Image (cartoon, rainbow, N blue to C red; front, side):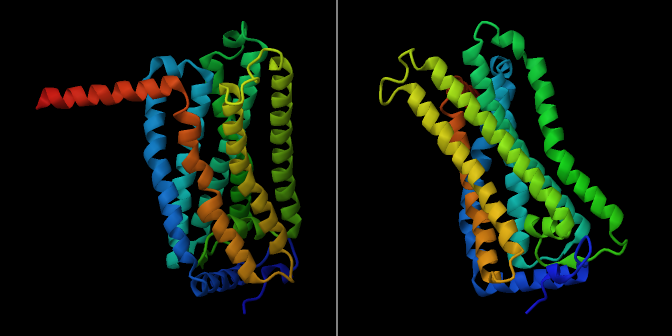
Amino acid sequence: MSVSPYDISGMRASWSEMSNFTEGWYESLQSWRMELLLIPAVIFTALALVADPLLLACVLLSRALRQETRYLLLANILLSDTVFLIINLANLACNSLGVWMSRPLCELVTAASVTAYCSSILTITLMVADTYVAVRWPLHYRDRLPPSRTHKILVAVWLVAASYPVSLMILMEVLEESAPWRQTVCLVLFSLNSRGKDMMVGVNLYFFICAVLCSSLIMYCYTRLFAITRTSGIWQSRYSRARVTLLAHAVMMLLYFGPGMVFTAELVLFHRSGVSQDVSVWLSTVNMSVLMLLPRACAPFLYGLRYREIHHTLLVLFRRRRLSQVAVV
């Protein structure tokens, strides 16, 4: 049985103990045959990686769609999800096969995964805010959010999403000894917890503040939207477009925010000495292989294909391709 790295005092656990801990984690993965969860992970990732680039191309190739803030925000979600899916699947495959990974590379994978995940969450929050602004100030909407301003907002989203994980990565590279070490399993859970209990206070505070701010803004916007539109008659029909749209957004936000809550539970349980390691292995693997991938597999269909303009653009692109093939023949 490996020694828990959290028995060590100081700002962070020793990397030798963390390396032993990852070996114990890999043995638990093998004993429970958790590599079988690669099957749903590959399926969800394949669905998303087929649909996401297609919808992303529709937005980027259409001048009309590039002028709409909602489509630019959708494109950023698709881009963030694509980056996350590629990194996550490669990491899952390496963990299942027991591929040794150096500490700097694992730190880079952790920073990139957290950045892509946070970018998706922040962009979803901005999509709700964008809908509120469009309904609240319809006559001044284009003046308040022109495409140039939206581009700057998206750049700011990536900078905000990357600031904390990249800062932590740089900090650990500066504080850590120069000799690199390798580990059999690379997880965001390990990388964050390896900072030590003192540093974990800042990590938990970061995720807590982000979750509270995003949730509060979403609840405020939806409450105000309902108050503004309740007398317009769009909510009277049980299957009205407004109800279906609200339901789709609610489901997607639940699917996106849910794995974050599960990850918070992982951080808490990871410090509990009475919790079996097998419980942590199951919870972390299911979250990374299924829960975090489910919303990204559904997003292109619940978000992208529901827009009539994107659906029309897809038909135009396929029609042009079919005509070009016929002309060549």
